[in-house]
Image 1 (cartoon, rainbow, N blue to C red):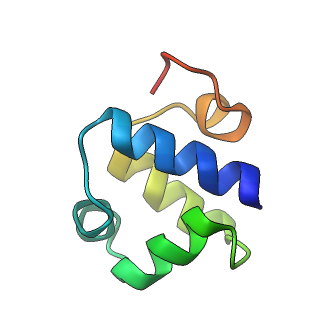
Image 2: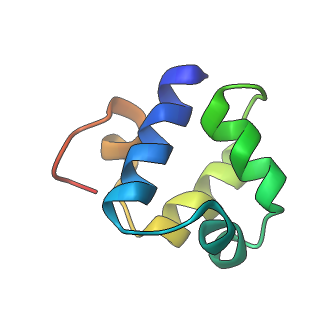
Length: 70
């Protein structure tokens, strides 16, 4: 989970978004985003869908950490 969290953090940062901004777009609690990025919690598929939509990033790029696609 830490790798996925790091990928989400990188994608969010590349977009110039804060954790709070992503949380708002994904309709999540900012603490949830923080825990996911830190690898402190498992991420549900439904939550990943919301995060992907909030960031506007491809699933493969998030899952594999493909630089430049997010």
